[in-house]
Length: 471
Image (tube, rainbow, N blue to C red; front, top):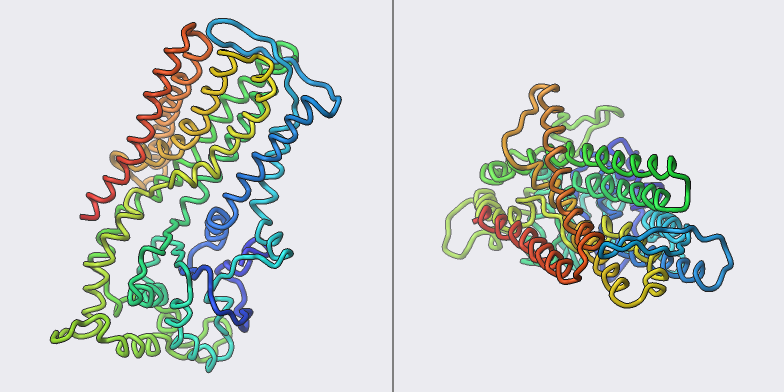
């Protein structure tokens, strides 16, 4: 699925015969809208399947390189000035650790499944575009009729959600099969527009940290000033694109409750019916997928209609989606929630790799200064990093919105980006100032405790808000 950078996920990718292989179990069944952008689905799958491995390996490699630079390999090490408790300490620091972490992260993120396949351990997935023969109509019909069987042997369902997902007949059919199995707890919902937000913030953090490291080295004064300016500019400019994308994602999510409330499988779009059963390019006749799907839903009549009820199957299925599935969907999508674990595997990685570069310096300092540097690093990794995406998405979704006028749209993006930057500056200052300027370590501990409690409240509060919204 991820080969050739997700070429098969593109809308204009040529249809092909089945590329699947027989399997007793399927790890992941991927449900997606064929009409949504393939690049967004590719980035979403990278986050789901590769980001954790990329994070772990990048941090390990950064740590190994940092210790080798400090104690094994004789190489030039730059002088860094570190402020702790109103005092300035001079330490030696290598320059390859963060860079090696970045290179390792990008390689593993893009090619982890390929590496696993070479070891015979790649993840098994079902993607309709690859596993269902799109050229042989007889095989295609058999696959449609047996789709419930594929889902039955799947360990989890991954929904690549797009604004048109619940308007597509195929997507609702796959969801109906999964709903029939009553296995919603094994479901992962990934909004495809969330992926570029996460990746944009992550890459911005890599750039900002690399600029910051250069500015803190023993370069001349002008170079340090230029590096500091580049760090601030990169961080500020990097907030604009994620904010703009998050605003559009929030707008789509605001329409989701009404979309689910008025859901009707009869009104769901289907490629063959939308083109009068004639392929727009080849001009060949297309068999009706809707007919096959309706036949399967009629066979599952008792699963959607309780005994003694006299409601038509399609109305019963619509009711099941509106009343049973709607709360679950809104709970998982209502606030565009970015899971904390996903934040640790993406946005926190640049901070973690940069921390590895400072571990030899912490060992050199020892005592209270080392503890305070470690506390500072922990707060940056586990508070500042995860909060960046959460703050961007919450501010992007707040207040009024305007998309009808380009100028108004850009102005709102700039205003919300400015508000986001101000909030992030406050969080960063709450970490940096107590460590560098306040003499007593208690102030840093108190500030850290407030930040940790606030972070927990932000993430838990968003979950409760989504639950109240679904109710």
